[in-house]
Length: 123
Image 1 (tube, rainbow, N blue to C red):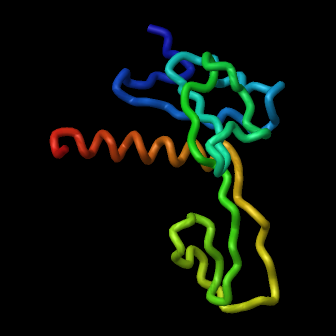
Image 2 (cartoon, rainbow, N blue to C red):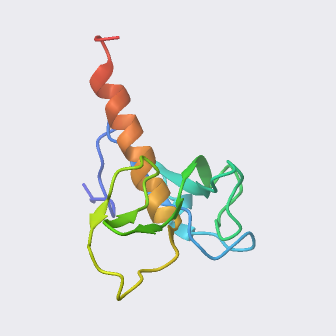
């Protein structure tokens, strides 16, 4: 029996980032069987300008994937919780203005699905 490029059990879900090259681009890997695409949403819950593969055939899910970075004297905040995410007591450097991308969104989606599965039978 010839083995496929990838053999994944039917109970395993594979999430893949839709790409960061905008509306006119697509990630060809999202056309493979059992791959679920995840696009990026802004803080305003709109599809991010850079999010690719916007056809629902390629991208079935959207999650927040833009995180503005706030620098405070104690460090950096980017999750929006108000807590310091990266402690750093120096004002001599600045990281980037924001973290963004469909890779962040795919991580959020996968975490939500796993949390949902873990809570089955509890709630």
